[in-house]
Image 1: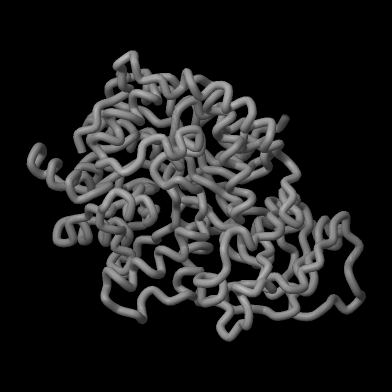
Image 2 (image 1 turned 180 degrees about the vertical axis):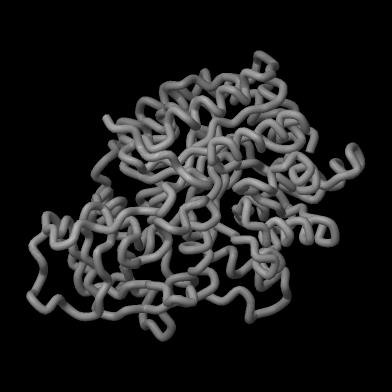
Length: 475
């Protein structure tokens, strides 16, 4: 197989996807839907009675009305009547194998959740459990209208295999701690270089140091050097809550964000998971300067459901947006969030932001849709490839049924999508022009088989009698 071209920043090819082959037969045609598109300023525009033509896995056209010559000859045809076509959603930060731990540790503070439950159980992980959990997660993502996910975990070759099998697109990184010694960082780099461009180009890779409190300064600096050398995104937890920031200031005299800046990580492409504990006076100027530089791109992934469960503050979306930092939507792992439902994250983002800002005009439904689509694509470094239904973009899209009683009548389609529709209204999911779910039927994964095999492995997985932990949570 010919190796993929050397990627540019964040693992992208230098000029994004090539255009569809001119005059080639269509691979997929969607007719009669309402299409969510973006105008040249990035504003959302709905196109009624739209036809979407896909060739070579790319969007060839999005037009209003039926084609002049009728439906083009195509291998697949989707009747979109009664649906809205959206760019596929992006889960900007998750740990897919953690669906195996869904509901295991509930109603606990973060210290007890990590130290008494999750990190002891994760010391029992096997590659098979990781693979099964990742596949089950991929099924959930497909059914929820997610076409791309950014994952940060262990045994990531298994997650890459699950990505290939499921048909999804993913940004994958092998997590590591400084307690693993040089081998941890080396394994993260090895994974990133081996799997970059896998699954017919649907896998983008990154480096994945766990967090500033588990990865020391020299390791962070070395990671920044490797990211710059190899054109890789760095995906890291940072300022997950205010307690972490306060502890970092007490121990090091710097916030987690300032530690990352000192290590050089704000000079490369960087995705920060959570950032609910930002110090506005210290961190926002740092992030604003980083966003203004041309050498790297900094973004934040926000998973509001988990913050509500832990009683944390939420990501300051408005301040970050004003600083020029893209904020993408996420779920984190199902062990803390219980679901991988990015649709719910979109709804909660709109509602929680209104609450914390004490401003009913912020965040609007259209802004929430922007964060769920184009902003999320930018956050994971794929803003030139996905996140918008436009000519030359990857044909990653979902059809959402808006004919149900809970979505009718429609006075404001953006509000209907954000505040009335649910992930269960996603009827069809398409990645790179391939249909992964049609009319709610999964076409690439066997959920009963996955659940059956995983269930047999759970007793050994959840055994904590050994007293071991993979790491110590100090915050």
